[in-house]
Structures are given as structure tokens and as C-alpha cells.
Image (cartoon, rainbow, N blue to C red; front, side, top):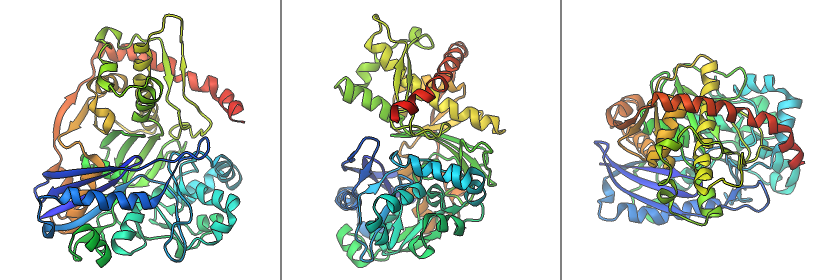
Length: 492
């Protein structure tokens, strides 16, 4: 038997085929464009997602008996606003998680409606990336389109709609809309009223491992699958990655270094950060988690190398950075290329190099980019620790984790061991596990994760380097507060 995980990322969809013993039998990747129509805006066409899934599925199943596929589940980028009319036609390009156009709407929600009221309704406050501010932006700036909205979807759930014809989402993804009462796992009537939406416009709610339906005939024919394939509700990419990395027990931590970066801390009970620097969301195993989200992580390195240095030689650019350089770089980088969510909640924050001199080298700037992202992870960990979380180790996944040098920097800057899972397909693997659970291969998500996820290697912090990086982190940490008002003035 086979189970398929669909990981709908920001730059590409990754399809994964897993068998009943947890082995990955095949993968396929299809890219699609990311649109930046105005500074700070980030959009995609949902039709591009579905076309990529359909195209990649044929490569995924090439050489395999497609009749043996029993289940499918999705994971995907969170918070994106997909607005459909009564004919299921997309009204406008989806507004993505890293879009920062909603500064006014976020200020309205946090200051006029009030942080305490939002936290009471949803266990969270407003961030620019969340879905509710996007809905308000559309209401204020595109009233004609807003009036035509019949269904509001999240990105991965648009794929589920194409698969099953059902308007559904799961609690982990819904947590990031600012419309869900996370503690009670239901849509917040007060937030619906604030955003001028009805419950009929919102998708039905499910646990990530619950079945939402089977493939509708048109989708089955297009994908080359049977109509009795079960489809699970799926999960937001962070919750799915945590499942794929085994972060299911209370207090377990997973760090993801993808386009964005996340600090994920599993909780058996709902926990709310009193300062609201971390998000309080539902987990894909039926429980909850705290989440810190760094808007630009591995994408900072990609920007620096490909857009600025015009090279794709990632390993070559890092080759000259030696152990003697670690913890001694006096060039600093703030990784806020798309503003920042955790723990700053500041869409006006911007990326910058600090400390440049006439003798500054390309190598030092490359090192500063890697270190700046790691320092941003440290910021989120410190908030979690201040709330009583005990983080003695963590799993690490995502594209950035493929760099041996970056992993070592992370271990020393965070001063904890970092475990690298045997399977490096976090969200896609987590989604495939959910597909297996919905088909009865394992009795629950925790059992599946504990049986299937294994550690490949561990990066241990080196005490001397950790000490040097502690001093550097404190200096780096002082930079944003000094520049905060300047960022706001620059952004107007």
C-alpha cells in the first residue's frame, strides 16, 4: 500500500510516495511563480498550485501500481487568503503568508479591537501574515471582489477542494487565520463579525488525521488514481513538519529552516504566550503547540547568493569560512527582508548589514547572513524559555539544514544538540503519515511518528564556540531596538 503526501510550499509543490513501512519510494517537485506586484506584496495564482500537483503526480507514480495508493494528505504554506466565488472561481491571486500590505489592518485589530480581546477570542494577536488582516484589506481595498466571496480557503485546502469537492480545513492551519478559537477548536463568532464574514463562507473544521472525503471522479481521472482513495484534512506546513520529524511529545521541539524559519514546541495542553510573541496553535496530532515564525530564513541565503552575488554555488561560498572564523565575525546581518513576525511583530523591519568597513570581505558577509538567521532563531527560543519552556535539544529540518556549516552555527548559537531526522522531507513526510493514519495503518499520529521517525545524526554545540557566540548574540540582539523607529520612518 502507498500513501501520498503533498507539501504545497511557497516556491514549489513537493509530492512524496510512502509505503506502509514508512519508506519513501519516490518524490517529485514542480515549481511555480511567486508574484510581487508591489513592494511588500507577495501573491500566487492558486490554479498554478493545482496544475503543478497534477503534473507532478504522473512523475511520482511512474513505475508504481497506482491502484495501491490508499490515502492522500496535504501540508502547505499557512495563512494565505484564497477567495472563491459561487462557481469556485478564484477572485484574485492568493495573498500569501509573507505579504506585508496589511500594516493598517493589523494596527486596527491590535490597537482598536485590542490585543487582549483578540487573545481571548483566538489565543493570538494580529500579525501581518495572518488571514484575518488580509480579509479586512480586501474588504477595504477591493470591495467589489469582497462582496463576491462565497468561500474562503487556505492554500493547501484549495488542493483538497480540487481532490474531493469539499470545503474543509484542519485545526492547525485554521489556527493561523486569527478566526479560530484555538482553545475550543471552533470558528470565533466575534472574529467573524469583526471581519464581516459568515460561518458559511469558512471551511468545515477537522482534525488533521480525519478523513474529509475520497477523490471525486474528475480528480481521480486527472491524477491516475482510484476514486476510493481517502483524503485526510492535512496540516499546516509547520505542524506537518513536526510530525515528519517526530516532534509530538509534550515539550518536543522542531526547528525548520525553509523559506521561512520556525520554532515549534509541542504541548499537551493549550498554552498562550502572555506577550504574544509566539503563536498558540493546534497541532496535527490533536493537541497544541507554540510557534515562532521567522519570515526570512533560508530565503536570506538564497537572496544573498543568487540575487546579489549572482551565483548558485552555495557550498563554494561557504567553503572559505573556517572554524577560526566562527564566533569572531564583526559583521552583523538583520534577516528581516520581508518584515518580521516572531518575536517582533513588525512588518516595517528591514534587512541590513551592520559593521561594514573598507576591508570587509565577501566571505564575512556570507557568514553574517548565516549567523543572522541563526540569531533570529535564538530570539524565538529565548521567548519560549522566558515562558518556562525547557528546550534541551531539538530536531532540525528544511533546506537550510543541508548545510553542515549552518547546522554547526545553529547548534553553537542556540547551545543545544540538533538532531537531523533520517528522512529529510518534513512536511511531505508528515502529510504522508497523516494519510496512513486516516487509512488505519497506525492507530494515531503519535504512534506513527514514534515508529517511523529516526535520528540520522546529531550536531552537538562546542562549549568554546557557544561562549563566543553568546557575546555576539547579545550585540546582535541590541541592533533591532536601536533601529526600530528608523525602519518605521523609512517605511512611512
